[in-house]
Length: 478
Image 1: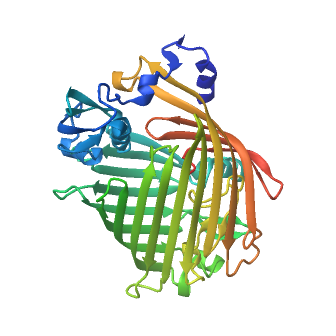
Image 2: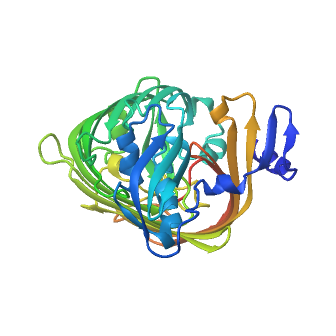
């Protein structure tokens, strides 16, 4: 679908049935009004801030993220930059489709500040149709696109529930994994709009289970009865004093049980030959987002780290401390040409852990492009990713079938080349081929980016094993 749109985009403003494809106007790219009429020297004092278009979102929430306050003096020679940064902070809340921040009623060295927003659609009942496997290629090639490895159901997301950017999520899922979950997060509960709270409850069960790894491939066992059941209930506290800085402290109770068949297949799956495990988990997460746009950054820096402690000698025999870190840097080399570098890694102690806690490269988003078919279980690992890309096309699709404020869909397409390095250390590598050695991959691809945080990545990759292939992903890489 996106590739067809790309080809059609070369014909500007060409009608295609009920769709019209056209370039993105420059004024819509900027989305902020320059400070016309302001002298190049001196400063401008903001007297009043007026917000329009927020029918549901509370004005204090917008002012909190705006970061500009009445009485503040703005240097005249940097007003345009300051207003554009404020606009981008509001865009990054994911509350609005469009945001404009500009001076209004300039009177000498005094002015009002206007903020015009168009709110997003906040209720999303989204059908669940997801793969049980780590990525599309594993499901299509290694699992022979088996339908019994598909999850289906419904996720209901209610964003901005009370107008305070709070979120409620309900999930009912069947298929490969039966999963039921409810999560509520209130980002601010104090007058200074810094502290938040949240709760989550999750229950899941499976008839098929990854019980061990051999030759860097996950091994599965399946039966008619449920092999594994999991329950988790937790609370979390958040603190956000600075606009780009975020802290979260979480505490959860976890229960897991497996059929005794699993322990016969892998005695190290759970510790001490027990078919059930109960443990407390305490974690602290730190996140700094200094990027220009959070959904698909092109310039700036992001840093995140999480320290987790599982087991306190109260409920069972779990004993693990885990540190995970991730950092990315984004540069604009030339107009529409960008360089990205990312570093991530994990450290676990003690080194020898039961299999159900042991993860490493190849899981979630921590993989080398070109090694998507493999995993490398490890007690510590590191990954370095680099990417050079250029924006090739930027256009918007208009549709008369959609509501007016959602009728314009912006699309950007980036061509890229990339290379990745990785190393996974294992105390007991066994027959694993990729552990305890330097790994590298490289390739080229296309990124398709549109609003509502939707990304599609098509990549052709090579690895040091002499393998190559086309890979499809639906999340941003860094």
